Amino acid sequence: MTFLHPEFLYYMLPPLFLLFGLLLTQKEHQAEFFSKEVMEKLRVSANTLTLKARNALFLLVGFFTVIALAQPVIKEGKVEIKAKSADVTIALDISDSMLAQDVYPNRLEAAKQKALTLLEEAKNERIGVVAFAKESYLVSPLSFDTAAVAFLLRQLDTSSITERGTDFLALLDVVQKSQKEQEKKILLLLSDGGDRDDFSEEIAFAKKYGIRVFVLGMGTKKGAPIRLHDGTFLQHNGEMIFTKLNDQISTLATKTGGVYIEQTTSSEDIKRMFKEMVRLDTKKELKSQEIERTKPLFYYPLGMAMLFLLIATSSCSRGAKSLFIALFFLSFHQEADAGMFDFMELREAKKAYESGEFDKAVQLYEDHATKSQNPQSYYNAANAYYKNGNYKEAAENYKKAAFEDEDSRAKNLYNLGNAYAKDGDLQKAITSYENSLKIKEEKETQENLQTVKKALQKQQQKDEQSSKDEKQKQDKEKSSQNKDEQKKSNQTDNSKEEKKATDAKKGDVQEQKSDANEAKAQDEKGMSEAEERKWIETLGKNTSSYMYKLSDEKTQKSSNEKPW
Image 1 (cartoon, rainbow, N blue to C red):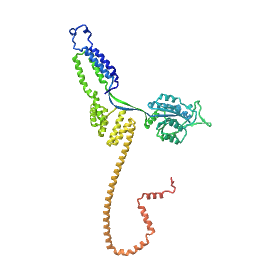
Image 2: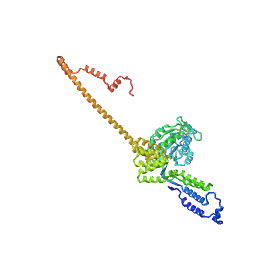
Image 3: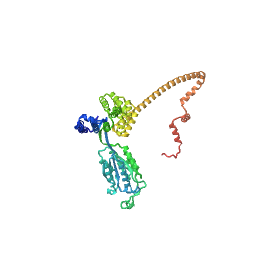
Image 4: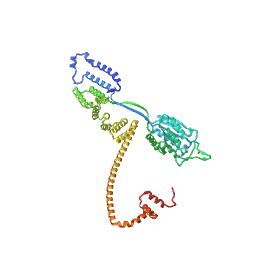
């Protein structure tokens, strides 16, 4: 146990003891005029506390109040707090085509309103603004000051830049130069897409410098003329210019890993875009700090001070007050055992854990967790089980540690995944890591998740290969059995043929002799061409080859068939 503000002990306890020391040793005012025997005869006995007893109680009230002000706590370890941000650069197209009124009141004003809505949604993110047409300019660097960014954003219009046209490559160059130190960058582009059909050069540049482009298409495919500030319409070579939304710019988003959405009249489009940016991008860590986790104990001395104050100011008899104090301590004793003096048991458990006596640490932490249902004790017991190599029990205790704050829950799920992985349950480990990442993005958790996924994939491949080998082995054994059976069958058939041949020889010797010369002559001459065609024809009709069937179908097709 320690004190967060020990200065109260140093500067308030000595004067307190000095003051009450003087009060307790001071004689009653009447004692200066009357002797002790006379005072005893004059005083009415009411069986109440004496002045010294009351002063002693007030001393205890002051003492416990000072202890409460010093804030006694139990240290429960350190927690790392990290400040993260998904840095977003808003690029606003302020070329003349953005003055088209196919979107109310025009494309530019609608785009500015979308950007302002994003600033309201992304209060915890750093936002920067770039304005572009033929050239691009950095309006605001990445900043948490959304009010200042919004002010600068509202001032933009088509007169801010004199060059005409739209150059997306210049825009990407500005983004790259403004965030050189960052490996990955997010760009939200609010534009009508210009008039280009090929964005391959911009895509290659964005991929080279790690720029992920999100595009919110401003305008409609139906299009509209461009109304200038003086009320006239923009013309070129005497003809009115009509501009439409160029949806070819969607390739710049999709091929750089971003998202393309066409604007709508509501704000749901930009809100959905922001959710996609946060989902697809890993927040950058800006600052981290370790803070000490503590369990406060100030309410115990404060409760004691209130009790003694009540006794000192009450008019009950001494017996009633003594009974009240006894009842209070009896009711408080069990709670004190389970709370006020837990730090001694926890300190012993921590000492056992640090010295490698994990069995002892497990027992102490589990005993405390059973009594107090403290999630930190379950967590510490799980860590001790894990260090001792008992991963199943570690997983069970991690599951019992029901933390309320997100950092502790994420860390607990990460350790639960480690326990499952060590125990060989890779699928549950993957689930635990993914649940931890949903709460808080951590590099170590992501790395462990990928490692376990690869291990699971290898295990599945190994199981599939083992299954395949087993099947091949069974097929081989079956094939060997079939061969043996075929061999036996052939031997039986050969015996039958030999018997048949013997019978034929006995019955047809004369006939064979008469046909011998004819067969010999036919063998010398060979098969005739007509017989050869006949056998080929017969073989062709009876064949089961798919290639042959396709060949037949092809020859039967019409001569007018087109080759494509």
